Image (cartoon, rainbow, N blue to C red; front, top):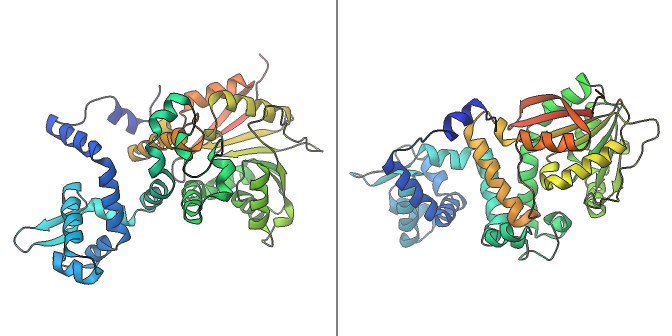
Amino acid sequence: MKLSPALEKVYTKEQLSAREAQRLAEFIAWGPVVFQASRLMVKWGILDLLRDADNGLTRQEVCRQTGLSDYAVKCLLEASLCIGTVLVDPKTERYTISKTGWFLLQDPATRVNLDFNHDVNYEGWFHLEEALQNGNPEGLKHFGSWPTIYEGLSSLPPQVQKSWFGFDHFYSDSSFPEALKIIFDEHHVRSLYDVGGNTGKWALQCVGYSQDVEVTILDLPQQIGLMQTYVKGKPGAERICGHGINLLDPKALFPQREGGLDAIWMSQFLDCFSMDEIVGILRRAKAAMTPATRIYIMETLWDRQRYEPAAFCLTMTSLYFAALANGNSKMYNTEDMEMCIREAGLEVEHIYDHLGQGHSILVVGEKRKS
């Protein structure tokens, strides 16, 4: 395993004293209630009030401004003091927001993760044990009986959909500006398959950036319906079309494009599949390629992250895949992804790193004959 310098520094040597390690162990043991108490500090506006108060607030002032009972506020403030999101002056008993509380409140990635974990994942985490043992998304059952979350996206409750798409789009959207330059300014793509294109957000970015490109979205039929609704009437929508396909079906072939194909785009897509399934998908993609076609795989490979908190978020996201999404995929590292690419008869020609919120783009072509 080859880790980025920041990760090697943290993950190869003990970082904590014995007392610090003991506290972290207790923090983990109480993790569920740490999460919920912190979420309520955000939802009920208490951290907002503390951030905006120059001299902090007493417990009684928080009660008056929120309308919450003294009991509720006392429980949350005392818990948050021990969690580390607030500080207190023991003489005046005035509470202020800490640096950690500020990030919990202000950092966009943290807010997206908070909503995603509460609305989408929280109940499902209870079934992680069975999911890892069975290789099935056992935590998905409280939403519906679909084999994976993707078949059920259009049927999830509105708030769950909002948090799921908010999480999915936040990470990919931050990489779009740099990715567009790579695809169109450096590689001059004019025809593109967007594999697993969801609502068509990337496709709209493509047709908005390039007046020449034609995009075909390959996704489940129900997702194609959502996409068509989303892109309808938007600039460039006439250059976007959909092709319904179950990408888990090994007999479902990629369409052949008359006149050849420049690019096959897979953004935050292959992490939705097991390694064996990835190899199968890439082999079917290869069958639709010409020698000039390139596959562009954009993923947040956890071992290539510039900052350690990003790797933490990504390895935790692997457990969402296990418990709720499909039961057999994860956020991969470079070694795993390159292994799948080689087994499909392809090879990595170049890797672009550190796009947006930690994405990499692997440019993949047919394996050259030795």
